Image (cartoon, rainbow, N blue to C red; front, side, top):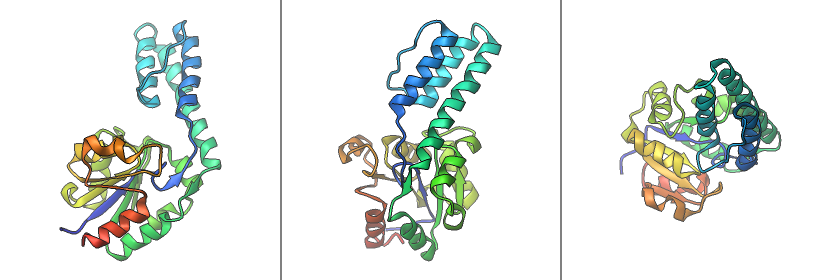
Amino acid sequence: MPGLDAVIFDFDGTLADVPLDFALMKTKIAALGEVFLGERPTPGETPALEWLAELVDRVMAVDEAEGKEFRTRGRLVIAAMELDAARTGRLFDFTRPSLTLLRQHGVATGIITRNISAAVRAVFPDVDGLVDVLIPREEAARVKPHPDHLLAALKRLGARPERSLMVGDHPMDVQTGLNAGSLTAGVTTGRMTAAAFAPLNPTYVVPDVGELMARLQADGRL
């Protein structure tokens, strides 16, 4: 099999255990939304960031200034929860050895995340020494699953999508890779089982990033 130019990772649930409660996040957004909408919105399956954007659009249609205030306060709610979770988060034991292994084999590495930089760095303070590029939410023009998030990282690394691997613990990460034309890997260190990845047919589905490194070596991709 052809070797890899780059491996790009999701962060929460992939390289680190960060206990972020997305259901509670949506509950807090709903409570804030009630102030601006006059009724309490009901959370659905839409991710928190996109749901907040939808609610803001509803408010903006009536009052632009109120919509901007809602967006600012909603983003602060999300960021505060991300930072709180990061304070008790930890890197998985295999994370640093896996990143070091990739560097030893000349494979570029990156992290793209819908989280904020401050939260990532709280959990992984030496990230810049082990990862070649980090693109958190605030630095992404469009966040995953939009392919631009991944393509921006690959552009910085000078890597081609077809010779790169996108790794994450959620089907959204795999979909991001597919959208960008890269190889993909799902890991089950987050909230998803192997069966959740099956409809997307990723290149790899493995228990964790450490096992993924063993598979990549066995397949001659490193």
